[in-house]
Length: 270
Image 1 (cartoon, helix red, strand yellow):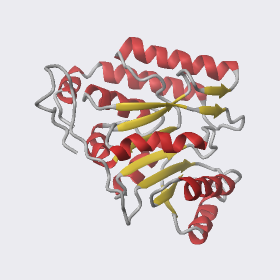
Image 2 (image 1 turned 90 degrees about the vertical axis):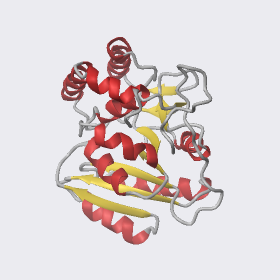
Image 3 (image 1 turned 135 degrees about the horizontal axis):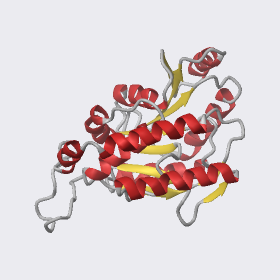
Image 4 (image 1 turned 30 degrees about the vertical axis):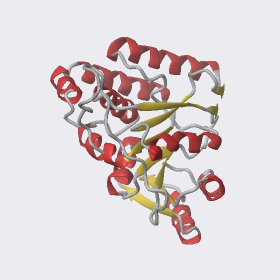
């Protein structure tokens, strides 16, 4: 994809030339990463459920890549068994925890033209998967995100997590002037050519990875497609809300301190 502005567009309109993927594709078109840490209970049934959904509904070849973040339980053994039993499933093992590290590892090594990820608990309804990746396949958009905060989304979660999520996204709008509605929904996709340019600029290896990727994409004038999702909170979530919130605040402060990086990104450095 050419990331330079379309010269025929009106001044100040950051449009980019995109090409749709070919109708026939022998290799996987979609590489769906599933980051995991100590998920021996949910890993097998949910990966099988994801695999069945893609097999039955996705019209292109696909791959599911389980990214094990230094699990200490039986997660790696289960991932290896899934790889042996399902031709479209692969897995990698990382020595350190961090969702961002997992996604960077999978996406950097993949040749699929569309890269995506979902949380292993499958809190996001899989009916939104094809609407998520279709605009990237067609060339309409560069990134796509599931959003729990847009009209049409249906969310079931406790009041504490609801307040934290809304406050975080409101903070992003007021501090970084972002236009996207939901930074942390674990359901995103990006074209590989875009990822190749953005990933070297993303510094975070944890939960802030998503936000930083989206902020850099938006500053570069890339198109971010939003898909309202059905989302049911996982009561067994291992996310430490306080530690994650503090890390996110540090990440926001860092992005605000980088005006030079902001100008370079807007000028099309990616």
